[in-house]
Length: 83
Image (tube, rainbow, N blue to C red; front, side, top):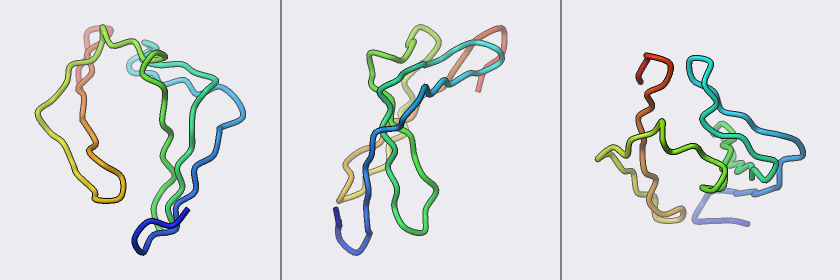
């Protein structure tokens, strides 16, 4: 898929993606997608239902990209640490 001037590839990740913070599991899924855009690092997308939101707090920060939509940012607090 091509969006604007960027070459975009979306594929299903073959395996398990686990996101941890300070020894706490924040998300774990076997249904992750990998988004690859030329000249940028690959990004994993995890379905909302596979994220443990009790350790996350929505932030006021968002970033909008015309071809991608709006990205929302979250802060995390687990095992006595925060980021």
